Structure formats: C-alpha cells, structure tokens
Amino acid sequence: MDSFWKRLRYNLTIYFLPLVGYVVVKFLALTMRLEEKGSDAIASYDREGKPFICTFWHGHLLMMLASPYRKNARVMVSRHRDGELISRIVGLFGLESVRGSTTRGGVQALRDSIRVIKQGYKVVITPDGPRGPRFKVQPGVIELARVTGVPIIPVAFSCTKKRIFSSWDRFILPYPFSRGVFFYGEPFRVPLEITREVLESKRQALETLMCQMTREVESYCETGVWRDERSRQDLRSKG
Image (cartoon, one colour):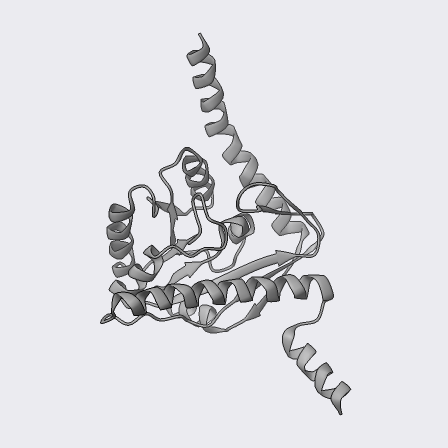
C-alpha cells in the first residue's frame, strides 16, 4: 500500500508540477521588466543560426526559459528523478532534452550533444548540475566545446527582488514586477588540440568567468549601476 501511494504521489508530481512551472515562468515573464546586458555575440549567433553551447548556473535555470535566445535549443537534463520534471517543463516551452549529465549517462549525453550541434542546434548546459558543487564547472562542457569547435557563451541572471531557496544551488525565484537581467558573456573557445593540463586551465577559466559575471549582474541588480557607468563615476571622482 505504501508503494501505491508513493507511486501515485510521484505521478501527480510528474504531471502537474511541470504545468505549475510553465505558468510561473510565463507569469513572471509578463510581469517582470527583463533587460539584457553584455556581449552582442549571442544575438549575432542566434540571428545567423550558428550553433553554440550556452552555459548558466543551475540556480539560474527558471528564468532562462524566458530568454529570447531559447529557440532552436536542446537542453541537457540529468537522468536523476528531478531531471524528469525539468525535461517536462522545458518540453512545454517547445524545447527538447538531451538526457544525461557528468554523473549519469555522461558519455551518451556527450555523443547526443555532438550530434545535435552538428545538426545546427545550440546546446544548453548547467555546468554545476545536477547535484553540484554549486558554481563549479564540470569538465564535460569543456570537452564538448573542444570536440565540436563551437564556442561557449556563458549567461548569468539576477533580479532586484527574489526568493533564494536553501537548496544546494541556491535556486532563484524572482518576484513579480521586479527587474530581471540577463548578462551574456563573450564567446569562450576551446582548441581541438589541447593537453590535459590546458583542458583543466580552460575549465578553471570558464568557472572564474561565470563567477565574475554572476557577481557583476548581482551588483547591478543591487545598485542599478552597470560596470561601465561605475568606471566613468570613478574617473570623475579621481578627476
């Protein structure tokens, strides 16, 4: 009997929670003031239909479904139980999933990702997922960029008013009518011919870059002043 109720609860969760997630994202996208900052490269790649690898932290996942560049993408989703929920949510937004992660199904996920990139799709990856550690890039995304030759374009998100959950990824849930900001980085490339040591240095460089971008967009949401504006203010104060 216990197994019956557990199965029933699981089925209800699988079928109804994705609908709730879909409605929440749609509602937030309609009520929030969403801005874009950073590189124009992602818009250029999207406009020309060029494939690339999009990375963002697992805790920033929710509002990435509202990004204007989500079309023509395939999302890497883990084989964990939570991954099924995420796969169904992204499916409601018209996105297909590549199932696997650095911990489960990693080799097959890498092969599938290579295949869809060759078909012209962009691949979306949370490099610290599915279970962390938080803000730590796993090597799979670097290997994917190396093999395919396409760039990684990192993205960070924050907002002025939000709830931060106590989960391992510190998941962000924006409040309605707040201001949200997508911060797009410059293309990050990984050469095909590379040693294991250089591969690790690339992994560390991407991790550092994504952490810097996260701090930058969080600072902007707190102060309302972007880094270029701060630089000009500093120059005026020194003058």
